[in-house]
Image (cartoon, rainbow, N blue to C red; front, side, top):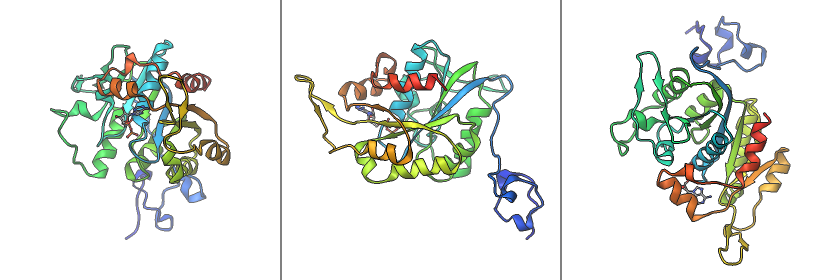
Length: 282
Ligand code: ADP
């Protein structure tokens, strides 16, 4: 069947049967970027990415947002992990979605961080989100386009995990100024980080740098650093891709406890200050 598709979002790659004059025809990348609503304003948008789950992507997203809010910036957090949302929990946000018929309003944290997460759409937090890919991708875009983001200086996106359909939508649709790749020492051995970096680079998205989380444990008595997951390979990976290591964060009980209690705003993650300094220069 002839492809009469005029909408690049529905592109099936069959240029020979399609009349659309889009950049992919000339070997370029079609532009799928979406715009925020005209009432919203977002100056910088930074995605936080990891190769696999459980390495602390959400922790780093929220801790970076807190650091920037403490520096006086207006900060937004878009929880792009639609099926495994955690931003409501770490920020202690219980508010459900509210809107004015046109736009949805983000929840506000104690520090005034604007947060939008899929939990706001559910009656109770233990309800699973059992949606197919296109629906998840649709919500992800709505969280950007149909939310009133009020004069945000820095928007942090907890990016959907993996390299499938939904993360692809996030990479293609959001006008990201860059991504921060979060890893853990074990993660680096399994090459999943390299896949995440390659995916971003293939999509022409700037990788701002690497954050190694759960890097070491510090002895509370003598301060000695113990590399419980073996030697780190982060410097090698950074060198291979020409990237900077923005932070190395220890595994620390208080990080887990305060996140789980919804009190991330009471936490200072010292090693992330360097990453925040860098983000300020963007
Ligand atoms: P991801 O988003 O990559 O799946 P999370 O940020 O949800 O991972 O982190 C997984 C768990 O590990 C959470 O319970 C979180 O509180 C905890 N955690 C993350 N980073 C640290 C750390 N540096 N020290 C202690 N616990 C951590």
